Length: 288
Image 1 (cartoon, rainbow, N blue to C red):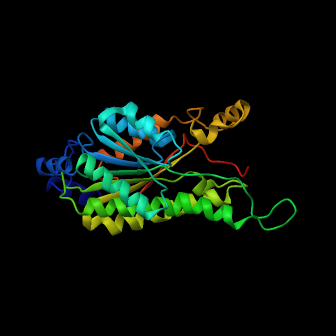
Image 2 (image 1 turned 90 degrees about the vertical axis):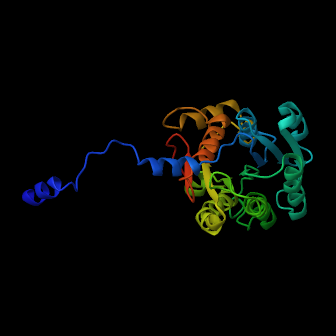
Image 3 (image 1 turned 180 degrees about the vertical axis):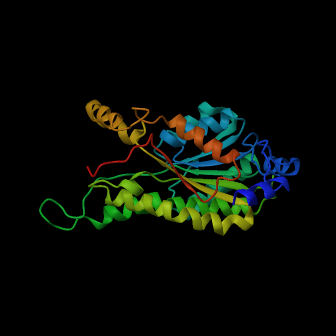
């Protein structure tokens, strides 16, 4: 074996690497990167939390954004604060016609659609059985799944339809980023509906990426841990401190800006596709 290695090495089969790809490969990598500047993003749940932070990051990076959220949200105020690069579209993410109108509005306002980030979501605690041993409400379970899972798919399919109709830029037509949760992997007691809905997002990521590969559209999911969002804002301060203390490092709640930073990195890195990325500070949630 030692003699074989030496002979192969002398023939040039083992070469020290400079760490740089050939020039042709470097060009290919650059050509396949979507620059968010002057591109258009549609962000569901964009009026608060993770979606709001992402909308701000897109505008700060030179892009335009359409914030999709409920009529009762502060989406119109947020869009006004972000200036000419932002629009608000009132829509229920599970309603096909309302989402179609939001996509059409993005094209009308900014000329196209290149990024779809889906952050709209709800969460209601509830076990399979009540304390009295009765089956819990099916309607509540259906509502969570309809908003979180069906709503996500509804928005992404209509966004993908628009992206696929556009000419590719830098080798890509668009990027779709869905928001899962570590509850999809570490669902706690009382999270059956929420974990189910987020598990569905995890499960759709790879097949969606494969479905859309021929259209040069990528799909990635982010699975956040415990983040400082409106979903946690209603908890007592002591409960928030306990949640933060469970995170190994950094020992705090995640910041929406950290989600937004990852979203923009996904856009810029063409090899990120069909993957679910945990963003949780190494947190693995206990059963309760």
